[in-house]
Length: 203
Image 1: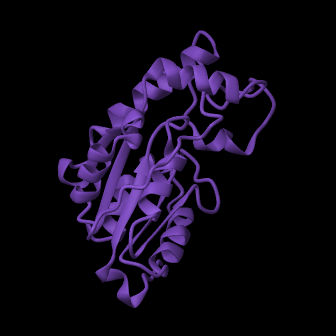
Image 2: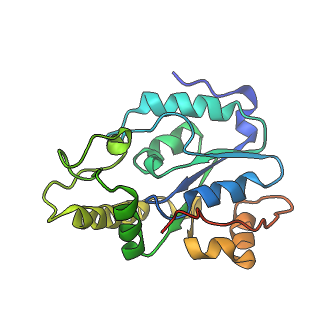
């Protein structure tokens, strides 16, 4: 059973979501640059798309013990665990949903995962990230499978309670006013905009 740190009830948990290849690393850097925050990117073990709550609980335990008022992590694989996260944090959680044009996401994944295929069983060489994605074995090809994944991902995001989520486009991560609006929604005290650059390899 997960036992949150004694001071955990005073914290706000922040989890960044997105398909991947959409600026999640940049989002984590922006959030982590705020005063009294500790937000990481893809911390620890990769969570499987097929829910394994014990693995998430181990992560939540460690995150709850971090110093800071704002604590959390940014990774695509938290989406299937949203309801469990809400329950375990007693609604003291906020989700930032990061979006990018679906065709651009497909292009980027196609380039990044050359020789691998996380979205279809038995295609490409095995990779530790395979477990983090749903499978679309009926897809016409790899690109079609990635597109189906993107569509499914953001359809699932629609089920997150409105009061717990904030959606921002990847291109807005370098727009000060948009970032400050997001930080204000998170109730960050004295929010600071830090110029960030999305992953230079994010093409």
